[in-house]
Amino acid sequence: MAKIRVVVVDDSALVRSLLTEIINREPDMSCVGAASDPIVAREMIRNLDPDVITLDVEMPRMDGIDFLSRLMRLRPTPVVMVSTLTERGAEVTLKALELGAVDFVAKPKIGVADGLRQLGADITEKIRTAAQARVRKLVTAPSPAPGASAPRAAAPAASLGRLSTEKIVFIGASTGGTEATKEVLMALPADAPAVVITQHMPPGFTTSYANRLDGLCRISVREARDGERVLPGHAYIAPGGLHLSVERSGANYVARVQDGEPVNRHKPSVEVLFKSAARVVGPNAIGIMLTGMGADGAKAMREMRDAGSYNLCQDEASCVVFGMPREAIAAGAAHEVLPLSQIAPHLLDRLRSTAGLSLNRV
Image (cartoon, rainbow, N blue to C red; front, side, top):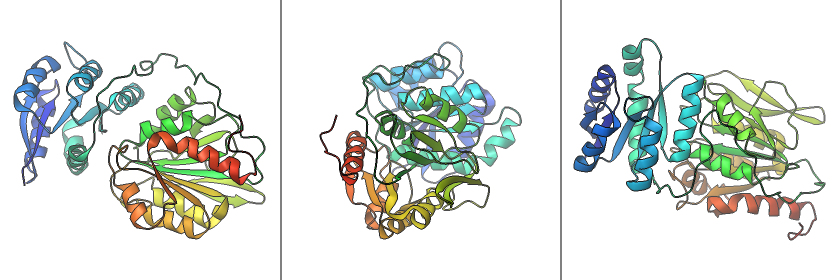
């Protein structure tokens, strides 16, 4: 089997050397080039035709975001961003994911050498995932740059009216999921049921992600807080590094945010969230499994179905990585397998039909 060919782009000679070493240690990949800035990288990529690029954000002559935007318009290639674990780094990383980067690695601000070595397994796993990812040509104008005010969705979504039961929507996602989840949430009206989300993301990034979505969606979006009531018209995102579940408190549902051991190697884990949906919410739950690598949440999604939930999975053609949805489908968890663009409309139709309302109501 041919090795995964990687080009490293970073202005730090130390980081280039460390990433080259980490990549070349793996039997299934090879660092075929290392560039100090995007101008050098441009010729290197043209000549070497890599399978994956690792890309720093802040570099001389052209920053990583500008370079990524040009790359995804002209020569779409799987990219893993290497960003700094800061608030600014988180905002820029979300911008990179919007432009088409497959995933990111958060490098420490201090102790970079030791930090990157400790992240070696994570870096190479993300490179393997990126090598399998579907990347698409960037053709539409992205939303405003980090720091700029983002407009809320313009066209008003049809109101759902009063639902007969208190539904909760549960979403699980990983690689490619930040943009997929955004597309689903932006299509929801302000009176949508509560949405509870586990997206595989490290600490320090979920706050910026929630804030970004809150500025784009009609529903309110924020990081989940332990013990808060789960309310319609709100979406709750699992904080990076903590598990999120839903529990019952009297007549109300509440969020439970807790530390604990990784589940399926993830924290937060979709398995933890979906198990709580099966145990606590049952037939009032709707499960959605979006793009992502691995099998986290597949078994628990089947438990949701067995408990009476209605489940949707993203189809292969629209996934960045068709891992988690594939495993959920194989487990018999899915009622419907849909392109990403159809998930939110199908969800809204389902909610209206179960509330005894016309599917054509506007």
